[in-house]
Every structure is written in structure tokens, then in C-alpha cells.
Length: 177
Image (cartoon, rainbow, N blue to C red; front, side):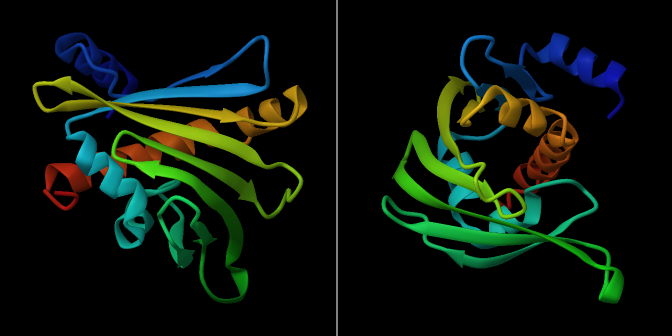
């Protein structure tokens, strides 16, 4: 989808069909908002079912392998993104803990293993907008403004939007039902 057609889709549907990513000016926090043609239950499943999560998370040129996934309050998780194959393959590990998992909200930690001191606290909220749409609101609180800005300049926006586009496709095919 081109930027122009994405903007037109936003105007015609009154929904955010591309992630809005904002840095809070007063605390080291990133806010993301994105609407999906899905129910809150479908979005919760997309974030808690390891097989489904692995199919959509991250940039289009990465594959995801789930090493551990216990999506419940008090559970933990770890996955590895891979780019390329064989000796030229690059791997990026991520892990965290689920602090709270409930139908309308997930609170978890998120750590990129390449920067193990950079733990973020993430809160995802699923809000039913009616007419088959749900808003995903996410915020990531990090330990410093420098850490927040590093995340924002890491290619995060393209990874988020690539992943959400893959999630849109899965939802349209009924995979997350």
C-alpha cells in the first residue's frame, strides 16, 4: 500500500490503518496506535498464540522462531528473528515476562538481547470500536530518553508497520478467528 493509498484508506474509513508512533516529550515513552478490522479477542489471540505471533511480528524480511511462550499472567517468553540463511544468517533474540494477560490488556517486559540493559515495560490495550474494528494502543516505557530515541531510530517504524500489514492479511483470511 502506498503512502497516498494508506492516507486515503484512513480518510475513507475513519480508522488508523498505519501505526501512529509518538514519543512522549516528558517521559521516555513511545506510544503506538493502530486500528484493525478485528475483534479484541482476535487481537488478543494474535498477541498470545505463539504460532500466530511468529507469523506476523516484525519486518517482512525476517522470520521468527519461538523458543519459549507462556502467555499468562506471570509467564515468560523468548523469540528469535532471523534474516538470511546459512552462515550469512543474522539472528536477533528478544525475551520478556508477561506481567498481566487479560482480555482487554497485556502488560509485559520486552528486552532486545543485543542491548540487555534496555528493558522496556509495554502495555497493550484492545478497545472495541464497534462495526468490526478494534484499536490497539501500545506504550513502551524505557529507562532513558537516549534509549527511547535509539528505539525510534532503529527501524522500529518499518518493522511495526510491516508486522501489522502481515497481521492484517492473517485477519482478512480468518486465521486469527
